[in-house]
Each structure stands twice: as structure tokens, then as C-alpha cells.
Image 1 (tube, helix red, strand yellow):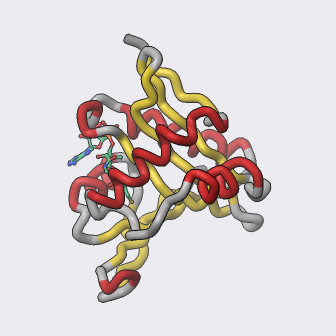
Image 2 (cartoon, rainbow, N blue to C red):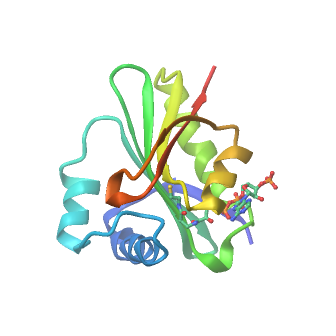
Length: 155
Ligand SMILES: CC(C)(COP(=O)(O)OP(=O)(O)OC[C@H]1O[C@@H](n2cnc3c(N)ncnc32)[C@H](O)[C@@H]1OP(=O)(O)O)[C@@H](O)C(=O)NCCC(=O)NCCS
């Protein structure tokens, strides 16, 4: 079945929220309460200029998402990426990243950056494979966990 990356619409919110909650359970994301209203506000109603939320669909199922924010000074920040466990290692994360980085480049970003918990070895390897390099390491940081900053230059 073919894979499609598209911009999320409000109808996708509950599926994306389910993925955010799974990411929290997997300890890949910060532990927080995620409400439908709060997410709709963040992703659709109060979104800043340069905000992107992409979903990946296989058939009619949303299997992953990535959200990001382009900064004013040429650095794009990736806030979250999640792929449903049964669709991992199929190239979904790579496709979401390509779409996001293409969008950054189109908007004159020269660099992409994000934070990942150091203990999330799978995600750290995923970023390595996609050409990101470690730029910072913060010990006992957010949530008292080690955090790695990884970046990729886009030129
Ligand atoms: C990290 C994540 C997004 C990867 O998504 P994915 O769709 O499985 O990634 P892809 O299939 O596109 O893989 C891209 C590359 O990364 C590698 N990779 C992906 N997950 C990996 C893992 N757990 N361990 C080692 N390598 C991994 C793949 O082998 C592939 O490399 P290759 O193309 O050189 O063979 C997914 O595992 C996930 O959603 N994890 C839970 C949420 C999370 O940790 N998010 C990041 C928070 S900062």
C-alpha cells in the first residue's frame, strides 16, 4: 500500500493525540496531560507562523506524525515524531523527516534541531541514520533525565 505524507487537519486530532499518549507511555515524550481542546489550540487555532504538523497515511490509516516550528533565524525545531509500533522500520519516520526538512529548506532554514532523551536509544539511532549529529548533552535535565540536542545542517 502506498504511503502519503500530508498536512494534518483538525479531523486527525484524536488519532494524533492517541499517538502522543503512546509516546508518553513509552517515555519517549515528556509526561503531561494531553487534552483534545489543548491539542486543537496548539495545532490548529493558536499555531504560530512556521508551524508544521504532518501525518503519514498508509491506506486510510494514520500511522505516524511529526510536528515542527520554523524559527525566525533559520533554525527549524522538530517538536515531536511518533510512528505506531506496528509500522516502525518501514520508512515512515524517514518520510516524515524528509517532508519536514524540505519545508524548512523551502523557507530558508539552514539548520534543523531537536531534543531527545538520551535513554531513547532507538530514536537516537534513527536521528543518526538521518544525518543528525550530537550538538549538546545535558545531564539530569528535563524531568531529571539526560537530554541530547541533535542537529542537521540543511545546505
Ligand atoms: C523513532 C521513530 C520515530 C522511528 O520511526 P521509523 O518509522 O521506525 O523510522 P524509519 O523506518 O524511517 O527508519 C529510518 C532509519 O532509522 C533506523 N531506525 C529507526 N528506528 C530504529 C531503532 N529503534 N533502532 C535502530 N535504528 C532505527 C532505521 O533502521 C532506518 O535506518 P536505515 O534507513 O539506514 O536502514 C519510531 O521508532 C518512534 O515513533 N518511536 C517512539 C517515539 C519516539 O521515540 N520519538 C522520538 C522522540 S524525540
